[in-house]
Amino acid sequence: MKLDYINEENKFNEDEFEELTEDEIYLNKGADAYQAGDYETAIRLYQKSADMGNITALSNLGYCYYYGRSFPVDKTKAKECWEKAAIFGDIPSVYKLGDMYRYGDLPQNLDYSHALYKRAFLLALDNMDNYYVAPDAFLRMLKYYPEEISDFGYSPIDIAAHCVIGIKDRIARGDNYSGKVLSDAKAVLIKLLDE
Image (cartoon, rainbow, N blue to C red):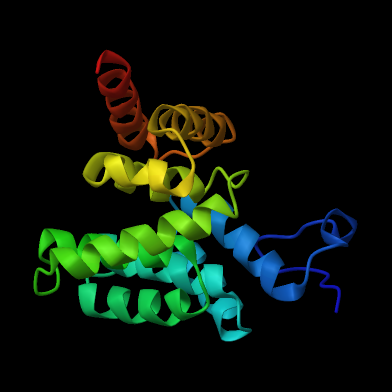
């Protein structure tokens, strides 16, 4: 179904979205609103997309709850969104659940966190060109379990370089939230090169 508009305030040319499904249109417009800092619009659009079955939109709602975008921080709701999306292999949901178990948002369980990071890493290997999700999954393994990367047939230095390039690419494409992640990836790469 083609849409003539998303809402009265945000008209667009439907030809621009000819290849996208309705849920993908809502997801993309929600992401644009999020990057612009219009979290209320982003949440509304993500929710519409998630209600249509879009797993990425559900994962993005988790971020909104976790970081308190337009409403109070609610880590329980973030966890619920990420658990639902992780079932379908959403990479950010898998590693964000790993973060919650590592950093104590949930009862700390480093073994479970490790398993989640490894799962996200393996999923990311199948999606290496997706610079919006793969570098973050790679970075967690690089920071906490670099010795295991070679078990999967990859050099930690190559994975770290891939992270830096990917994060730079998404920043160049307008991602306003990846500056610290880029600094972390560069630090990991420098450390690996110095060893």
